Image (cartoon, rainbow, N blue to C red; front, side, top):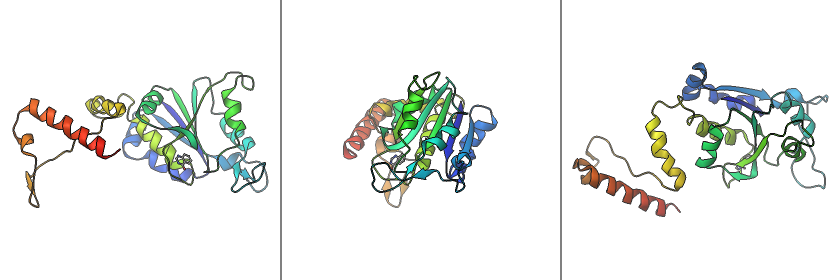
Length: 227
Ligand code: JBH
């Protein structure tokens, strides 16, 4: 999978080159390129935003700059992901669907967002020779300064689903249940007593039928508690 991310804070996305994803990249499973939006600004001040038409607080990111940055990245193979608090809420089924894509382009907008004509342009074939898939995505109902951390969350969730990236494909199968609303059961490892707290006895019994039942009940209780 090819991933491009466009941001005014390229250094913010540097952790993507570390650990799991660094390895996946050196193995050729994923290729991540970070692009500095500001390098596409053409005016003297290299400005990437401007005041909103109609007035109001905050600044809006300029369509021209985004267009210059995105045009060279986009092909008919691209899924463009615009990070915005107004987008569809990211979840595991969305991660699974992005994991099947060939090319993801992440547009990291600041909180107030990108001129909406960027979304309009890339999602409508009347403007483009080939209309591509454009997704507006939010990672949750809380306020971030911009889309950079949101892009990292999505990239981590998506790339670990690519065959070969994760060491242990079994844990992917197990986790796919979480996509259906399950949460995981509590886990314990040695020692069997820690600071006076014992591990639930059933887990030491070796009775796997009973252990599976207990885990299902515990996962259920956890799920209810966290609603
Ligand atoms: C900002 O504030 C945010 N909350 C959730 N997702 C976002 C994505 C991009 C920018 C946010």
